[in-house]
Image (cartoon, rainbow, N blue to C red):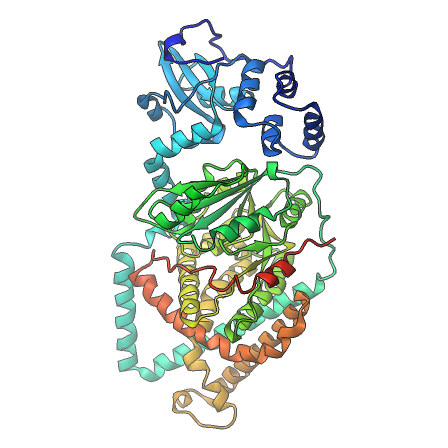
Length: 631
């Protein structure tokens, strides 16, 4: 049954009615010769364990195409089918509703006939929701059927500008970094620099004592924090993980932001294809910028499976990963929203573990964070140290924070959210260059929790010095942005995080930056511990200096212990012999810290892109070993 403007006056019920259920669409497809009865039976059996409509199930399994399903839905519901590409909606109707509402509910306003509004939908079961959404616009509705892909294409084409601007502003203003822009950071930066230079000129002893005092506080706070997480982790290490399978599997949408990733794109598709989660419940969205012509061309030339598609992000004055995620999320359908990076190689059963973690968790759990690890740790000393650092963070520190009920700084990949809770948070802050850690804080402030899943994603460690410094500087700049943003109202932050959470927040963001920035003043302590007098420390009392040395040595020893515990948890102890190299690894972060400090005031929104896929071909055998399906 088809419908266009020329035959729209046909008799049709004005008030929406529930779709007729005399015949299931599966029976219709079988009767029309579009579906095998055995395939229908298999789909119905799977549907008992998967949260998915039968039409989507049949398409996901490859038993029926979209046009056949739409035709069956038309016969079942008595709704006519239209071709949006041949006859698009009237332009003036687009101003009646926000495009996000239409995308979320799978409909668009097609035609206006007298007092009757004709609405194109992709699923007749959504008629009730659409009626509620349009209650203030029209009480007289007609419905027609259209392809969901055609509906999404229309919104992407006709509403790219407002959707793009909305992606910049999803995060509530009071919790967004977007206020840190324009001339404001530059003025503050110059003021602080002039103040520091003036103070160092007039009272150098006082300034040096102040800096060393701040460093001592940071050392004690960081050491106490890490010791606390280690104890918490150790006490909970024998807690059994949830079962590997959920009773009712949810639909999962995964966003993979791409920027100049044409070289790694084919390998990315292969790694996503290796995921063993039911493909009918999986939606992989390859998100690329409109200005990225190479990636766009590569995607256009490649045939993607039904469960994988590309989403183009319109050009904008702001070009960041969180902005791309905000825009792309409008076009996703999953109940769970996940994020992967272009070079990621997740364990094949990771999504089963994520679904199980959500099902077994309390209602206040909004997020599941998987472990991150590296497949090219053997490249050089830098990649080995990077691997040890991540092992400490994801195998000890984050689980320790979870068990204490404290806020968790999320990773930027292999992180999964309940869609409704992510929407309630305002999605990602498009202006924060460390959007993941910031979102972890906002999540906790709203009374939600994140849990760590016993599943691992393997990435490519940044093993070149200059790119490592650039990547780390972006992270540290984002940490400072997050600290400044949340500290606009410190009393509110105290109330929402609690006393201990408030302290942990400062240690995580300001303390981490301080640890790297303080290296030039702290490193000489190694020489001082062997009895060599240094002029830099002659301005402070011996008692204070002894406290500084003790705190410094204790911190270094504790980091070695954390590395040892983390590597044993990793299950591959060959890196343990490289632990002493970490003493030379942490100081190089000072270059990143000073670059981050400069950009915080001079280029706050600048995103220093990390290039992916540099030597992952060389480590393909290691990737295959790490991500092999285990019984």
